[in-house]
Length: 35
View (cartoon, rainbow, N blue to C red):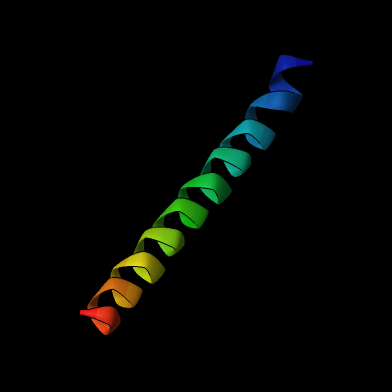
């Protein structure tokens, strides 16, 4: 059970990290556009 969950958790963590990075990049771009 744990061996099956571990890869899924790694993929989920990677997806969350990518989303956060993308959101941060969009926020920085928007802030520079406003200023």
